[in-house]
Length: 90
Image (cartoon, rainbow, N blue to C red; front, side):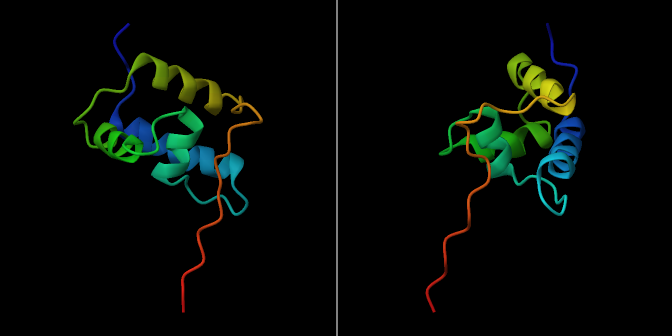
């Protein structure tokens, strides 16, 4: 099945999932979406940005996960999406 999801759809999904999952409702960061999708943390953000820009196709697996999440599904309990930012040295 060819993906029907566009880069705009991925960007909209980040915004909607942030409203659903984050206190305050800010859009998920690309890194948070990477964690939710189970992508490599080393290169996943580049992949998210490339999907949003139309440089990479949205795979069927990613599209299915986003559709499940947008319908109210959540990642497994052992998936840590939100991490505190490291404290900056003063």
